[in-house]
Length: 170
Image (cartoon, rainbow, N blue to C red):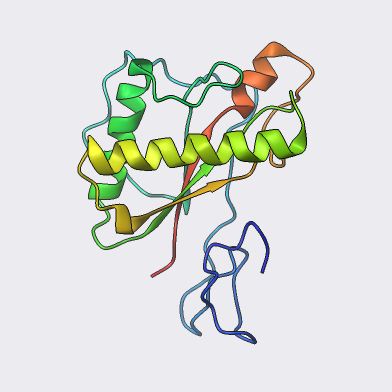
């Protein structure tokens, strides 16, 4: 078990997938998390959300552009948060992990706390404002450990300040 274990209640000795969740003999292990290439710009929040959210992979990345050291849910996040809620609603009974990520500015311990606070705030928003059952959501912080871009530029750091939703296997 480690910080990235998506199913900490899995009995010891069980065969698990890359998320630490039990694997049944018939289904194929989910595809690995595919993050967008650093050169791809996220859609601006003013674009309308798609009418239905497909779930092609076990993870969806949502870019919530946090200012450095900020944890509050901004009104600028509304479109992306609606997309998150739509994703969850189109997968009834499914459980989700909300992963918070940061850039590399600051200490490792500070960034772990910051990323967890961001994920917890998103969970609270989805449960409160979007009426998603909190029991379907788990918040985790990963700090700066999984960058999708280099932290040597402002653009790379912006891309690394993100939230990812992982769909847990049923």
